[in-house]
Length: 227
Image (cartoon, rainbow, N blue to C red; front, side, top):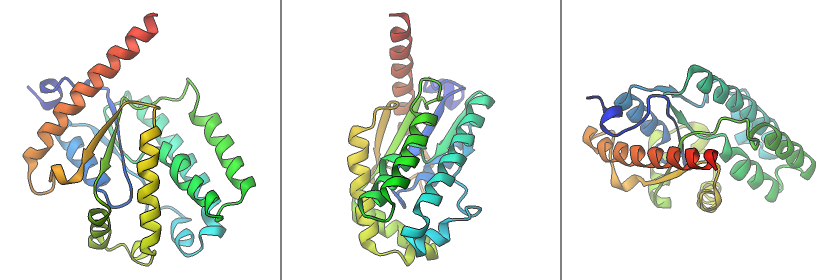
């Protein structure tokens, strides 16, 4: 019996990994995909034409970056469901509007006109009954100190040059965002409770929780479709 069958995880499931920068989304994505024999969907950081510019001038490039992310994530979401599911997705489309665009608008690094244009476009594309939402969003959380340590360890130059106050602001906004998120079921995991890099068995209890959440979610959807 494979892991999907053992934990009752449907072969067409779509699971999205969310959380602030440095929390270990890519590591969890790879670990789950390997264990479940699912495909992966990663954020394409290296081919992003705006990211380096953005980190050097938030005000100039924040709107361009968010529009680019929205288009890329929307295309990726369509591709995942056209394949028939069976994907682990690194970062969700929902974080862009709920955290990043809103943060830059409130801090004055995105104009009100740009923010409203972006938000109207996001709502028209994503917040509709026709948009294919994931079966489950896994939210990775931990202490701010743990997150900053992980950012330092991976050593990306553009992140090292970013003031720590920016990461603290983002950390707090993520916590506020997840408290109000309701577009799909959420499983919260603390990064201190597992170590999928050094202990391959630590993925087992994670998969058990995933199976339970997805089964409950599909039962809920079925009952509401019948009523």
